[in-house]
Length: 281
Picture (spheres, one colour):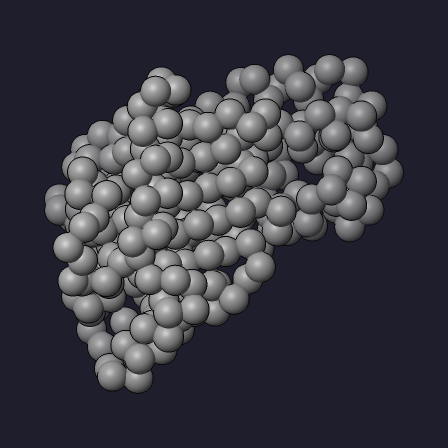
């Protein structure tokens, strides 16, 4: 199964212990307490939610760049937080090739995903994700599965915690027709995707099984717009991921994604199809 990232697929790399993340979190906590602030007081000052602040302090979430800069200012960090953040390089449950993309993903203005193999990680239910983990070869241990699920669940918070980020997903109808994990799990998965598609910043389109013209035949892709309005791309295979910076290649992938948006069902028709599929299970 593809993607040992906690991103799209099931996860097939050895999870790493995030010592540097935990250390950075302890530094933030120490400066916050020195300033006499609770997490509830500190969170709005850095414009992040209390759960996000808690996750960063516990070493469970990579600190976004704007969080570091705001924390420096709010906590009068003397450059210590900024310097400490430069040494944060390891993320639990994420494969090495995906970490750089995951860091950018947490700060993206726009994130576009086309997937033809399975439901992307950001849209997965826990039951669906665990089914993918359970079917991984070579098999994962219980602790590995827990770490990988935690990494995926943490990433999924982006959909609700970044309401100004535009998330677009184009999914092949087949990823639902396959019924990975069985009928009940698939019904729950469809209901979850429908719920997320109701968020103002999330768009889900379904590519119908019968489509005579298809711009995505070269496989899955992700496109990302940074806060500096620069576009980057990411593509993944069985045991590796390709981070694409070349503007010509990124432009080509943008062109393909734009064409797929016109080839897939409209937003309303996609929702209608998902409702029908759920009812037919």
